[in-house]
Image 1 (cartoon, rainbow, N blue to C red):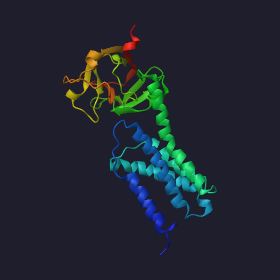
Image 2 (cartoon, helix red, strand yellow):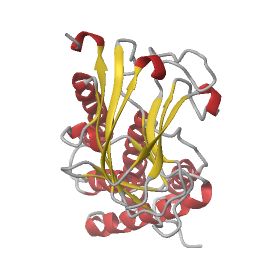
Image 3 (cartoon, rainbow, N blue to C red):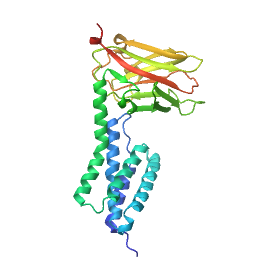
Image 4 (cartoon, one colour):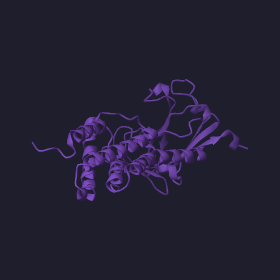
Length: 295
């Protein structure tokens, strides 16, 4: 029987890596730290896979040939994750390919230095998320503004895709002819204490001739709280820019009448309530007006 490259330890290690990559794991929606940690884990796992496979290959096969194979494997894994209930994204593929490249390009470097390089690369997604959240907290009470570098990340999309543009956040439905139910976007804020809020203000551009009904939702509980256990306000929009201001006396209570925990906001979002066909809508700056800002 032909001996496996690297031996049975390589086979067992590879099986363990694939098990970790494909085991069904459901990340919480908007879990920005979890997404960063997942990207870091992909760096480590594909670096391990590159080391396991590369040590059983001749020198000429350890470089770009091995990297191309692992990049293809990373793409295949992302495709298979659809069937295991896990999320699929370019970030995980790029992280896996980068982890493999870190090993494939450093076979002549001492093992300890290579390990430090892999760990540093794996830490980058977490460091980036930390930096973005620091910037977001610095800009509070702004909740979203296309001019802010951090505002392009951290959105939870339902029934479409959000693109940051100079004039606003453009939301494009997946299927303009048959929009999904309640298409819109949500965001987990970095600054969760809204107790000094006087009002929430937003602007929204509706391009269609026919008016529509939009909704603003704010949650103070994890998961998907019921309608009565969250704040929700519906408002009509007409063609052009629409400006909405919600004072804290409304914002501070759920639909069921319970006081909203303004010191622990979990998520806010904007979505289409009425069943309208649309090509896009634009979400402009969203911010809170704080009490000390009023003369």
